[in-house]
Image (cartoon, rainbow, N blue to C red):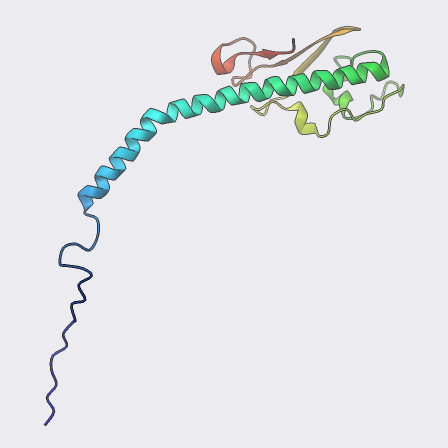
Length: 151
């Protein structure tokens, strides 16, 4: 007669008892090391991002200066303060003149890396001020809050 034998799990040798994964202590030590690295390296990485934004703003201001110079060549003047940098995108309504714009591709070119509009002021027929107020959006400041001006 056939007798049923109790079910036995075969030992394949892959796992021994107590060695199935990482212990809680190993996981906590790993998390502590990651937190320490982020705490030390994090501020430096964020500082690099902020310096990068200042460089982007400088490059954008240089591009806006070139666009303003093209506007001046066509119109024989820089945009007025009232027309502002929008005159680089759309023909000023006051006069048609020789405007052959748009002088920049997108309206996003008028916004600095901190999502604020570049400040443009005509200071005379052949001069202007162009500035980004930096991360704080206010005149003055230093570090990441420093103003970035057209030279």
